Length: 196
Image (cartoon, rainbow, N blue to C red):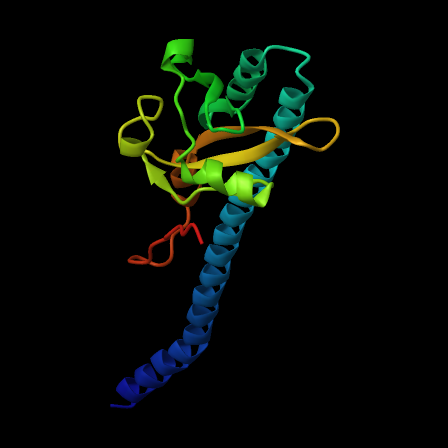
């Protein structure tokens, strides 16, 4: 009997010693998971900051008109694998040049984009605009089936500051899945990426 009481006391003492340690382990794991999520957020923000900066440079080059717009757009697609297509539009919304992952778009295939929401918003705001997340059924053959994307638009301004065109491009968002895949919250927690 004395042995049984001693055993219960020893086990109880060990549990009192272990339980706070387990609580600390759980807190450390939660802190680590939040840090991983924060790193994912920073990676995504850095990507959009970087591509926005590069797009402003492309817009400037398109305005200078020192080289063919197709060459400028091709370099942009080459430098950013996430971009599926890029277009230069005139102020009426007609595509003047377009490059797609599938290649140069022929003059006959250029479209009137005057009713596109992103085009209209760039005209109104005269600044960079991001569309809502769109899916491949609205994007055409340049995007793989089911892949989410955003369309980004920028004004193309002449040296005197006058608006001379609109630069539109589509960015596939599949890379975000790769980034957030490593973020886990417990056994049943999930990560959800929102566009607003």
